[in-house]
Image 1 (cartoon, rainbow, N blue to C red):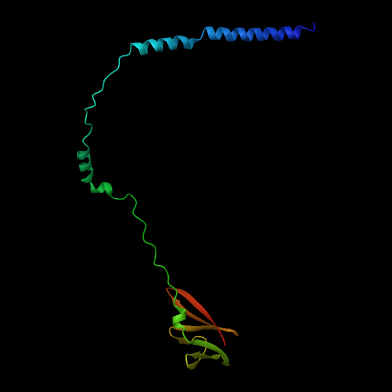
Image 2 (image 1 turned 180 degrees about the vertical axis):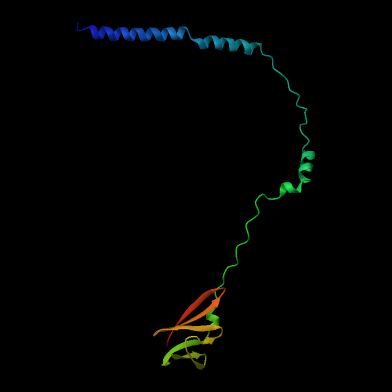
Length: 156
């Protein structure tokens, strides 16, 4: 009774080995392999005429060159980028300009080289406008290409 599982396992193993041997003896691919070998022995090599010049490439290229519409782009190129905005040269425009702390009402004294001028918000100098006054700086502005550019100068 105790040996029954071992006997059943041995019987299953013997049965599996028997099926494997049977499959190797009755292999269907062996018949196909021998048939293919016979056909290959009977096959005769075929020769190909290599003197064939093929298509006339010059005629084809000439036909293509005569169609200018073929070479037009399908999608037009993108437009060129807009020109870059060049900010104004504040160093050149404000050369020698030095706002001071001297103030009378809303006007401040601005030294320009060896001379001076009293300016208030909104006054223009060299195409620049005095935009804003603060206790420690004066802000000059210029509007160019629809954009407002500003430059701060310290008050001395």
